[in-house]
Amino acid sequence: MSKNNTYFKVGLKSLKKCIGYSLIGILSLLWSQSLEAATRYGQQYCQKPGYTCITVKKGQSWKSLFPNDYDREVVQRLNRMSTNLYAGMRVAVPANLAQTNLIDLAPFPAKMEAKNYKVIIVDPQKLAFGAYDADGTLVHWGPISAGRDYCKDIHRRCHSPVGTFYIYAKQGAGCKSKKFPIGKGGAPMPYCMYFNGGYALHGSPEVPGYNASHGCIRMLPEDAKWLNTEFVSTGGSHGGTQVIVRPY
Image 1 (tube, rainbow, N blue to C red):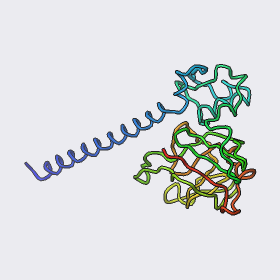
Image 2: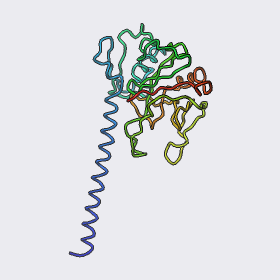
Image 3: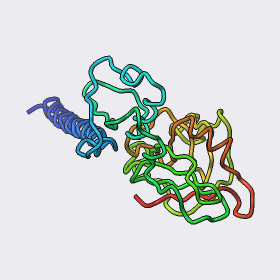
């Protein structure tokens, strides 16, 4: 056998191996994405009394399905999702949508023990945050997306830090990441509120109904703006508004 034939066979074998590894990687990514889509928060309501689930048809959108602004907000918050809809997606809807009170859907108690300072509770399991005033009253809540199990661009788990923290800095609508995308930075983080190093609460159009971030706490842009401008402080005896991130 000539050297050229030997080199060709070795090269062909290496090429097959590379293709195999690439295919495995693609299939793994697709499986991971499918798993995340299948475990969107709203799916759990499909079997619960008082709720129904609709299957999105081609061309339908949040606005076409729910023309009323308040109805649309209720459904999006229930599903912990603001991303674009696509055909085949399942969306949970309260059976009596017109009579549904948004605050009644909150996955947090209406009252907690008063601490004499404001608290934001973030729950990666319930995919939601709750804002409590100094008297311990829940004044606002909304959907979130915390750090995901694995981030392929940094090759590790990227869960959000769990524990008790305090907001130490915040910026307005122009806030941007200094780290992501990797090697570039510049990812929009409107109304960011930093609570632990580079980790922040911030607005995002990508709140998909499951944990999908690099570790920051994504929330609806309007929620981030409200917290940033109407609720959160960075001073005081505790150094800033308290943030409690519950375990996964």
